[in-house]
Amino acid sequence: DYDILALQEPYLSFLGLTVATPHWRVVYPTPHWRVGVSRSRSLLLINKRLSTNAWNPIPIPHPDVTAVTIRAGGSAINLFNLY
Image 1 (cartoon, rainbow, N blue to C red):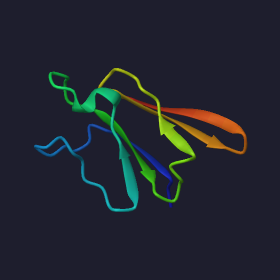
Image 2: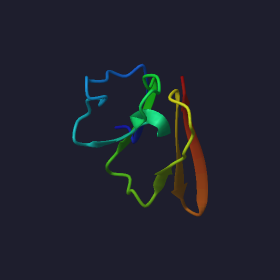
Image 3: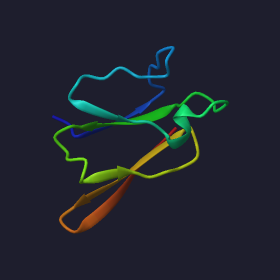
Image 4: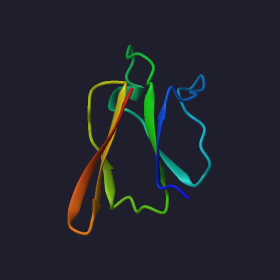
């Protein structure tokens, strides 16, 4: 079992969405939905077992970088997926 998956060159539908099972929350790069930005080439899947209170996205204005901060036990870890 995994809690976080870092994907590169993910499948994106014509709507710009990836496909994931209901057990995952998809985290897209910050500019993913902006018009005129190139196709996102990284994303993170975070298992729904991890509370949304335990992590939050880090805003980075690049379509090839997805990042989150994960908090546990008084510590914080920044996780980056770089294409």
